[in-house]
Length: 564
Image (cartoon, rainbow, N blue to C red; front, side, top):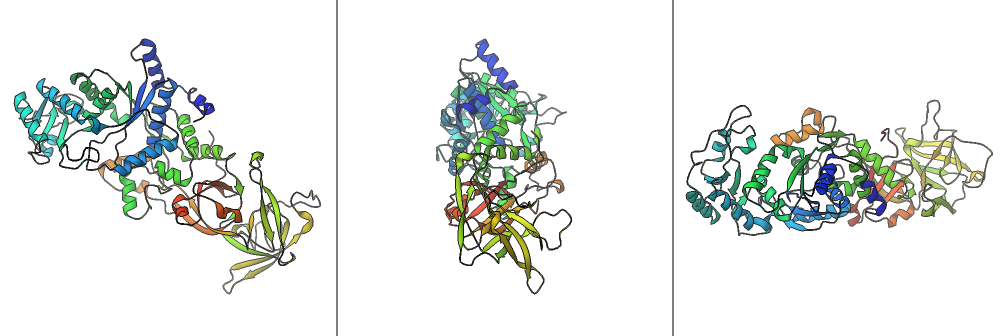
């Protein structure tokens, strides 16, 4: 992140920023310390990118620091693959963490704090099944029922907890519960489970443990151990805050972090829920977690989104105390703004139609000068070949055009970008009546840059020279999800259901076209970005580039009706 961009981050105010400033002024904290605490059980998405940006930029603005901490308390779902992917995503977004930590680094400390709770009469070993605990938890309008093991002596719970640690019991046979208030109006305070038995090998600690802390218990302790001052969470953790504070207080931690919640951001047409993405991968709809149609960070990177555009978009959406839905076109706007001065211009024909310029000398090739970016002259120019045979877009020809049609038709004349005027004089068709080739004439006096003023044409079309054109695949993307609110996806994910009718998949989310690009594109490398004349901004797909295949992913089209 350069100095100019860093200055932008200091302009937007929000409630968390105000809290931090007040805490520093009042002396409650000396240094702002935040953390980004992902669970390594999947790939990060746009919501995580927002949390990352908020945590890192707010801490940096106040001269503080941000830790990356993996909340790896569930070995059955976590993997080193996800750890490495998350680190890569954060670095790609442009951030550097101060400390790299794992919740599992603190398992010994957490165990000691759990023993402290038992000794204080604030925790007990329960032998009820998970179903019994669920049934006695109560509802929003009815209090829960106390476990028959709730008042067992502390010494007995200490002994059982130690035996749990030694692996003497089966999974689900016993749990450790906090002892708080089964009649609390906040269900999260009704003796929540804080340790369970899992006979599973952990990616970091191996077979050392067979009991693991629950996230709600581990999280506040991790913050306290690391000296986090402001624990920033999404809004669904608001009801957990009383338990967060209870753990900090009753475990008698020397550092006292405070939790603050901000609203989630949903983007129209997007699917980011891990459960849904995993199912779509299993069903063969997506080709992986980095499929360019999903809002994972790896998917956005593969499609061609830039970290600068993502950060600018996140800053513009701000930080709110409520969840919000943002039109996906707003993100597209920031991508265009970022790429317009960076991406070189070029021409590519996505649906090719052969054109033979019948009055151009056979065997002749001339090289024309074309600017790489008219809005950024410092990018210079390139030489493109022109000869008798070229390709144009099939959509740029119509045999029977309507009024005011300004592209090519029989007897009509257009300008070829960077080249000459051409006129259609003959249409070649196959036995089924399909147009297979056009014959045109060119006017040598109309060469681009010659200053020709003899006559005007209203249409300019793009093209590529046929004999040197590079075959390429063009992948055009539309939103993966059809109409419907993004929150519905999350709700369905929580219940394990599929897509509802309003969240059906868009059958046109991916269109693959096989066409041609300018000859210099044969040297294009993975993640090179270009603006193809009239088609939009494209990124060289890294997966296919690694296999020697030239595939361009359309990042965004050139125009949008969205206003920021």
